[in-house]
Image 1 (cartoon, one colour):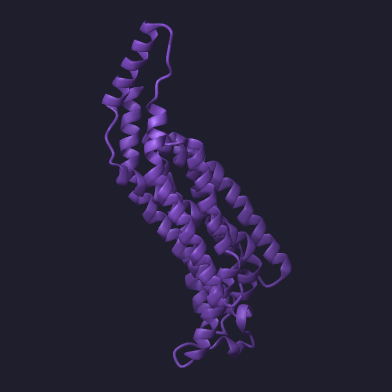
Image 2 (cartoon, helix red, strand yellow):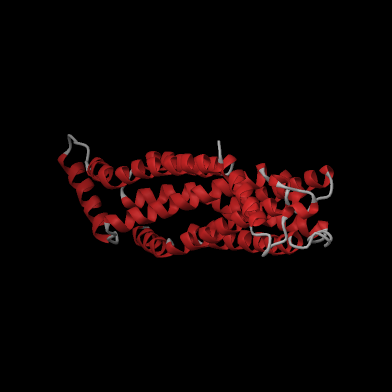
Amino acid sequence: LSWRGSFIAAGVSAVVVSAIVWWLLCCGSAGALQSIETIPESSAAEGEDDLKKAKKHEDDSKPKMSSWAGSLAMLSLMGCNMLSFGSSKCIKEWAPVYLRNTGLASSELEVATLIFWSEVGGSAGAVAGGFVSSRLGGRHSLTCVLSALIASSSLGTLLWCCWASALDPARAAPMSFPVACALQALALAGVNGVRTLAGLHGAELAAFLGRRVGATNAWLEAVGQIGSVCAGQPLGALAAFAVSTLVAHSSFFIPPSSSGQTGLDSPIAGTTIIGVLTIASVIMVMLNVALLPQEALRLSHKAKVE
């Protein structure tokens, strides 16, 4: 596929899945609420009255959230899940490309070492995300904001150094190897921290909104896979397009061909991949900040019920 065909295919798939998700959120919520609110018949009248009283008390104490606000919260969470899936996939799959192209690694052994430490950081970030969220009383959005800030800061530092190095072919490596290992580990730690909590947050949000938890998690996973798909060939097409654009405007930028490298072998291609990861992390921060009011509402209801 050409880069145009890749973006068109990715866009069409995203639009189709978004339309299905929107239909489920708008049209399927009424049926879900009706099924949840249905109280099973009981042969004992007293037991039935107790169930109705408990249900009424819970409904009276539950904060009200409009359907559109709940749908926007769910869509924000799906977008965050898609970006976390794509970022995690990109760091793992594209690391051998951008680590060598940008000069962060000078040999295959150093590439393997950087990937090793990124996986260690990803595992630590997943464990730390769950632990911090529990210590904060189930504030998943706040924890995700902190995790995404770690990822965006680490990736932003990598981007800045690699971009400066790409524009100056005579320059040495963008940074020392130990620093690159630390930043790579922190990047995947932050991304995996968000990814780990997305499913749990979606389940609790679905229960709070009165929607099917299983179906919600299934659609979160399906939307997340769109991010994984976009982190493959479409991202490579974007990197190649960035290189060709910079070559066409060589009067403003040092062309990658000056160092004998073109296409995905260019430092500009690796820098573009890191730039996309940085933008995705910043968007994850903003999406989770937008979810903080809903989270406060949900936790206040949980405290009243308990």
